[in-house]
Image 1 (cartoon, rainbow, N blue to C red):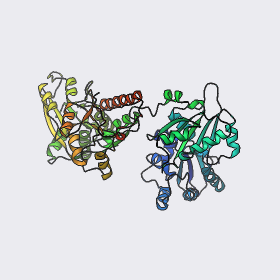
Image 2 (image 1 turned 60 degrees about the vertical axis):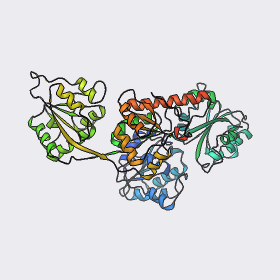
Image 3 (image 1 turned 135 degrees about the horizontal axis):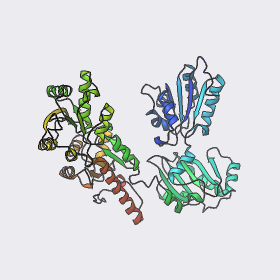
Image 4 (image 1 turned 180 degrees about the horizontal axis):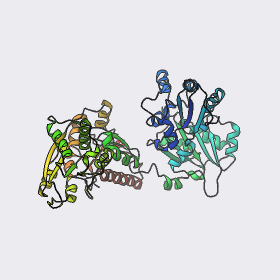
Length: 549
């Protein structure tokens, strides 16, 4: 059916969308566009969380409700009633997105749904996705072809017949086998019986393209023993899907050089960041680039000042020309001023003629989002001290006004105020917001913190140490503790924590980088010793080593 053809007068439109093998970053731009305009989202359970974040908050997810009500296992490739749900929504004039794992062109159930749409004249389109059989080997460091043009054969072990096994077994093609963990050995046996040599290299990857990915290298004849020795089988999780690659391309020596994903310095680490999602956005992105899973837990909550009159006078002073500068030392300070502006019906134009300073990149980004481009951002250390290094002294010739408006937290230090006064400026030091201890996180998170479920914790200030311990308890002693500076490290040690990583600079990004260096060194040491690479949460208490980056 041509997706550009005129729509049926009483029907909606269906987009059959490939969500890829699991990594959210593998969604295509076209897929994100389609999701953003969907009225109804019908997704395979395995990829629901991947695609739902790109859909509108009001999007209807009938398949999720159906799956929850029927308690259908998540390993079912496609629910049998999806075609009826798709058709019903399209008949009602809705824009429907049908999201499937991998690529819709390789899903037999989806092909039936497409035919049903075509039979009723419902307009549909197909947005291809990265098939698991292609994406997973790429993430496992196993190229499927080489410069000599090796043939590649794709096999679904659940539907392959004797002729299929015989043809692949008699050839030297690279075979990509989609199967389940507990059926890998049987599939290997089929290939050996069909003519492949038992010493043919084989890789098996589970949870491919996600931070749960694990890959085992073996041969067709040894894979059963390798999985048993690794204590992977027998297992209650034996039914989970895997991608097995058979052929010389999957040889262990080659994969050791090409395994780019699982060799990331923090691969699979669960890292606790004691900040809100908004505050931790760029930091979390950085941790993800190192292979980690970031988990944000707010340790402080922001509330208005108890006496707002001082803040109200200062904002009015901005409008009447009382200040030469305004200095923002946090994203929360920007938010507090912005909210007060909106209360008075003001916008960014009220900053005309006023110089604006931001303590760091994140604060500067918050200002830009407000419509204000800061005039001063520290060129070096992103802190009050760094801001003072670049701040110009008051000059009565060039500065018609000698006053600075400093909106900040009630618990802020006096460093910036004292430094500005020393430079000749008058400072209106105004409490723009109060910081209070946040509510405790969910019980599951508290248990993970105290029970060693997290591999690392990033402490970005002394208050995050005190507040996290206060609302959630002390992190387990197997958890790697990373601190942004000596003062924070001292507070952590006063609370009985053992500091493993210290940032070389007071920057959250340098802190994450230092943690990555620690993880890389730990990984290299395990490999050099011939030990398996494990996460800190997988180690026994007492086996930790202390290190500072």
